[in-house]
Image (cartoon, rainbow, N blue to C red; front, top):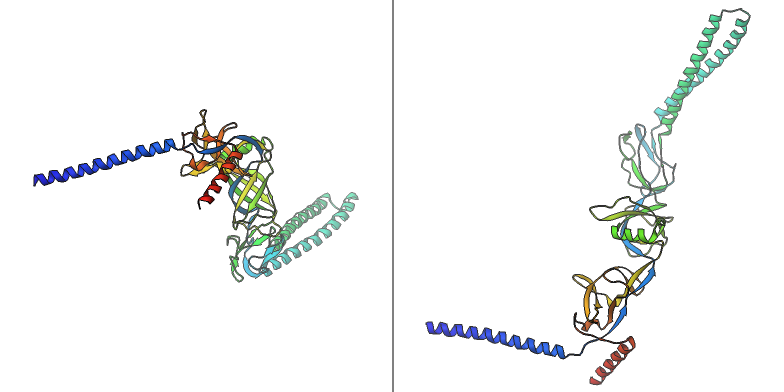
Length: 391
């Protein structure tokens, strides 16, 4: 029994040692093959700076310049509505009618009181004028004149009070016609005809202005600093392009005319706002869009060909040549694209040399054969010709 176990264990150990030895030999052979493999042909390019107008993309949201809740300013039964939900209305347009009879009657009573007091005041003025002549000739006592003067002044005060009451009654009567305070688009009617409304009833409907219209958007604080550095004091009225949710570009450009005075600590962004003309009401309050913000002044930045920038799970990278002409994997951060180049915001500087062609065969730290673009094209042509002959 023990002999069988010893044999079994010996076989297992032998198999492990054989596999290890085979793997070791395979690695040695593979290393020799790789060391004997000629260095891959590559083309290189020195990083240069380019004068560009920086632009930054960000998600945005359409916001009405004015968003107004239409309220009842008096109490009464809602008698009529003069619009349909979703209509575009003008400032001053009548939207609702609150039953006016009670307020019209109050205005009539107040008006009649004003007329009565005016008539009494006219009579008192005439009596006072006669009394003034009589008191000069001592036909009446001065005390009687003073009494008539007091009555005239009292009527003046009463007339002023009555006039104020009349104006207030007319104001309330005017409020029976609920008007739109702004141009815009009407939303849902919250209180329908026949209901009793008051100033505490809440919004009867809501109006969102449509032209002009705002778009608010956040911009990364680092990009904000880049804008501040490039534009200096000229940091207003930047050009803004707008892309709708379906990817189509909005036909009119906007102007970035506001920026917040703080960085949102939770997102690391600065809120900005652009104003757009919206004559055809294409933009709707609450819509999500994409904005592209342009700097006012050009700035010199390092650029790299798009084809030279690769990407893996850790991010974007290039192969940069060191002082020994050996390629080193170097991670970079890119901004927006400028033609056929990426704008490099971190990782490369002017004068750095990077590999632009032959990237697929490059191994970090291993020698490469640097050729010109013309030589690379010739090598490609020869390879294609050779492949065709083999077939």
